Length: 264
Image 1 (cartoon, one colour):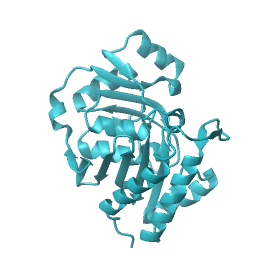
Image 2 (spheres, rainbow, N blue to C red; image 1 turned 90 degrees about the horizontal axis):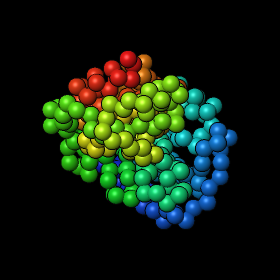
Image 3 (cartoon, rainbow, N blue to C red; image 1 turned 45 degrees about the vertical axis):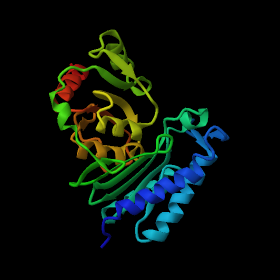
Image 4 (cartoon, helix red, strand yellow; image 1 turned 120 degrees about the vertical axis):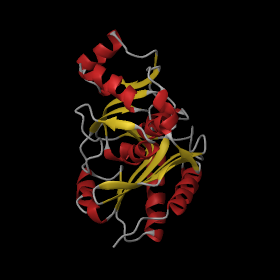
């Protein structure tokens, strides 16, 4: 039986690896294109290999699914997730990282029994580490995150929207009649979820993200008290490699407004 890994030990591993493999390469990295047209750098590979080696030492019984593996490898690993599995994005926001934009993160999730049980998202540029343990809360650098104070917010002020992955019809609808005062888009899905767990915005929309992008962040938002679903109203995490949309709000009132607008 695989038990829940120690979150403090995991955070130490992620922090140490990121400082060694990412910060030393930031603004000094070569890049190339993957088959799907997305960017990969030497830092992605170095970070994934470093995490894989360290986690194999500490938790040899837990398989490791990384973004930079083939889809066939990922599918085979995910089929055994009921017994425990790491899901890792070594750099979420590689385009930002390769351009010297300090908004990127490392995302690590532990999945078991078809649920995310533990999530860590680390922002090396700000030395901000978000983490959550199922039914035990969400934290930023050890301090609890609690969106209960946001429950009184009933007007959408700031939205984060990734327009590139939306249908043209939905994107045009939002542009023509936005239900918010201001809009942002930063470029790291994992960190986006965490920023909303910290109430750094009101509502969010992303048209298509991958499991390793949102697995850890979705637990962190949930444990902080945020609300999320796909555009179809389903849970974002469904235990598969299927790309998923994400609608997020920092409280139920704003979610109802935002989701209602998107689906009207």
